[in-house]
Image 1 (tube, rainbow, N blue to C red):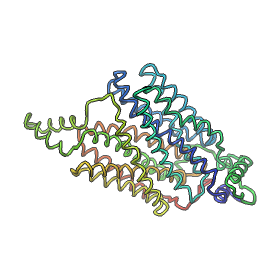
Image 2 (cartoon, helix red, strand yellow; image 1 turned 180 degrees about the vertical axis):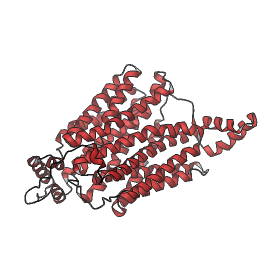
Image 3 (tube, rainbow, N blue to C red; image 1 turned 90 degrees about the vertical axis):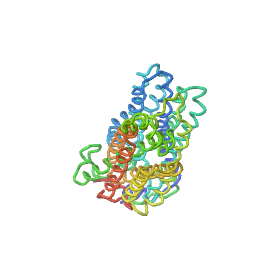
Image 4 (cartoon, rainbow, N blue to C red; image 1 turned 45 degrees about the vertical axis):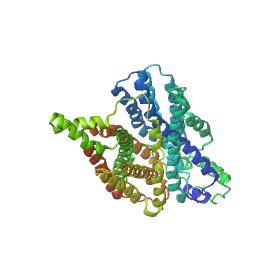
Length: 469
């Protein structure tokens, strides 16, 4: 007899997994482009439709609200009805409303349609669940981490697309052309088989064997001899299963880790944009403080005017496309470092190390340094928080059994969206009052997340995916 895990290890990594890597990469590329387009679309509509600032901010927030509200739902669907079905429906949903939003006549329509796009994007992380279940143990961490490369390609491609499309065809065509990776995925996903692990768990033994034989044929590898063992039938996609005594502590810690990852990653993106637009904060600080104190005699007013002047530049109708293109490749070095250490240190220590380096870089930002050093610190911080994010994507599917794997990943993704939704109020609103308090919030959050990573009860390095709890 043999289990699906034995068959996946025996068949190994080959032609099938290469195709699956490209397909999963397309999903991540589409996700990255839909996120990047928010930074380009909002300033354009601000001027074209004369929107007030709160409506511009709401256009971004509604996407994260849609993602937050749907992530757990897509995980539940993927556990109950299959990874392939859940992923296919979410991609087709996102594609439909993404193209439809290009024809929005007024602000209300585009707000609703972009919220529905966010609802669909909440299911894109399930591509990692399906991907991980077809990967042998030795290749799993490396392959999931390298998916971040497609995210970087997606952000760069979106910037290049905006440079050529925005001045000539406008933002509506940009929305349509940005859906190309989703369109390709929607066509190619019909080639994608259902997870053999899911089929076995749901009692479809013959379908699982057919899938495994197909992979073995494509890879040119032999199937294991014997009979495939059918797992004990379990209820799937139940949120209560994430809080059994075995997984309760793991779930709570992972929720905080995912929250901290997104909270810090998107917060750093906003902080970097503000700092780059402001120029050298440290040199301007003493000048404007002394200038306003001289005129008003009040230090409190000086601080208020200083941060308003430096960190809130006047609105512009030109999206910061060049700056976005400069920042887009920044996560790659962190992913490469994470790729090198994750199978050496283990998943928990890798996540803790990434959070710790972000914490140290945040502390160093308290020191008045030159622009070059400031840039280096921001990029190191962003690189390692990106690497930590990907390490969480490796760990989460590994720690949960097949019956709750998609739901576990979906719920964690939902908590990440909560962090992304909250972070603008820290990185932009709180920044107006105090740069240092803002940095304390981010550095403190990552310090706690590093400790949470160390306290995770299960290390998944060298462990196969669990079929049953």
